[in-house]
Every structure is written in structure tokens, then in C-alpha cells.
Amino acid sequence: MEKTIAIIDDSRTIRAILRKSVLASNVQVKAFHEAEDGIDGLSLIRRLHGQLSLIIMDINMPKMDGLEMLKALEAEGRLGGVPILVISSRADDALKASCAKFGVKAFVNKPFTHESFRSALELVISQP
Amino acid sequence: MKLMDHIVAAMDETLDKMAFMTFSPVAAPDVSASPFAYTVRIGFAGKLAGELTLYFTEKTSEGMSRNLLGLRDADALSPGTPVDALKEFANILMGRTLSLLDPATPFTLKIPEAQSGEVPVTLSGATREEVRGMFDDYEPCRLVIVYR
Image 1 (cartoon, helix red, strand yellow):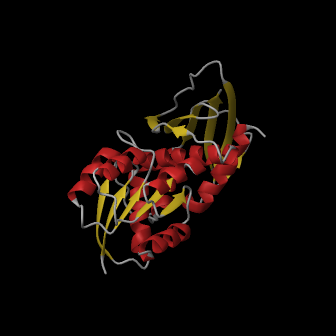
Image 2 (cartoon, chains in turn cyan, purple):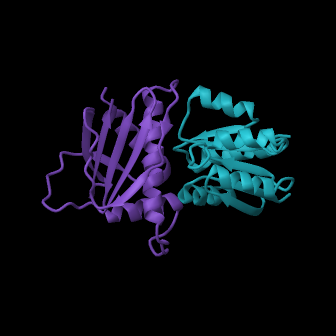
């Protein structure tokens, strides 16, 4: 089944790397939708509520960071059912625990290889 | 172990995993004209607080962005792409450095800033470490970290 994927990261380099990596994986893509900060990400997810198959997101972003965005989405009841994969340069347990509270299914640390990202991606997509 | 040693270790890992380049610290000779086209600066806070400044040549910025994005030499680079790539590199590098230094302690990273040319470090009253090196054995670069 083709997936509609949101990529939320302030770096267009990372967004391009992630698009390329997803396209090279086993995941069938219907569309990518992108945002470059938490505020745009919030708007995007609100607009596509019910259509998204996966959210790939960063934490450290301008205007609104990833945790604040997840908090807002949870308050609006928009987090249920959409798998979330976080990509971050932070690797501490406190962040991972915060992400887990919001239902984040996988966490990939930067720097990452395409192989490690695709393993996390396939794990997240395959989970019920 | 000095903080710069962690930075160099993080640099090796990042370049290996994502940019397919090498970095060799060297005692580079001073040059009368600065070879650096871009300066990228990223602030951080946590157990240590300060800023990392990286100096890159034009060739490095183009090569790094091509490698990160999987582009061939003949592929056009859209305006702003090299600078964005350098900023993301700085973000990954500083994050990985702080994670290597102390995996358990949270930290925050400021959004990286890029400028043309060479911009001197101005943070005073802090520990300062510097390393000069070469990307792929032929492109010079310079890293300066100041922290408290």
C-alpha cells in the first residue's frame, strides 16, 4: 500500500537525504509532504490528519521544536495511529523517554547511514 | 581528553557515515590570504556551553553537499544548497560531540548560522581550542571551539 509521508526538519539537506533514502527502501511512496519547523509541521499534520502513513521528524527546529509540536498534537488528539520516527543529533535517554511518551516508534541518531535509517523505517512501517 | 579530540572523533564518524570524506588534522601553514569561503557557527548549552566555529573552502562546501545528497559532479547544485549542507554538518557534528562527551546529559543546540568569508571568534573568557586540518588531503579547514 502506498504511503503518505510527512518529513519535518529545518534542514533541506536532511529532508533531501531522507526522501532519497525512503525511495530507495521497500516502502511504496504515494507522496511526501514537508515542513521546516514545528509550526509548519503542526499545520501540515492538521491539514493531512487521517491521510498520513508516517511522520519523520527532527527535534531541534526553529520557531517550535519537535517536542513542543508533539505536545500540541497530543493535546489535539492527532497523534493516535500515525507512526513517528524521530531523527536527532541528541541521543540522551531523557529525550528518548520524552519521545516515547508521545508514541514515537523509532529513534535514529545523527550521523546515520542509509542502512540504519532504512532499518528503522522498515521497523516502524511494519508495526501494527 | 580535550574537547577538540571528541570533535575530531565525531567528525570522522559523520564524514564516514554521511559525507564519504576524510579529515586529517595537520599543522597547516598559515596562509596570508584566507582560503575559507564560509564560516558556520553553532552554539550549544548543557554540561558545557559555548560555540563551535567551522571554516570551509568553496570546494569543500560543494563536495560535501554533493556527497550528502548523493549527487554526481555533473548535477547542478541549487543556490543555498552548499551552505545548508554545511549548517547541517555543524549541527550533526556538535550534537555527536556532546553525545560522545557525556551520553547521559541532555544538551541544546542553537540553529547554526552561516556567513561568507572568515568571521573571527569573539566569545571571551572561555577555554579555546583549535584544530586545522585537511578534507580529503587537499582542502583546508579550521575548527575553533570556545566553551565554559
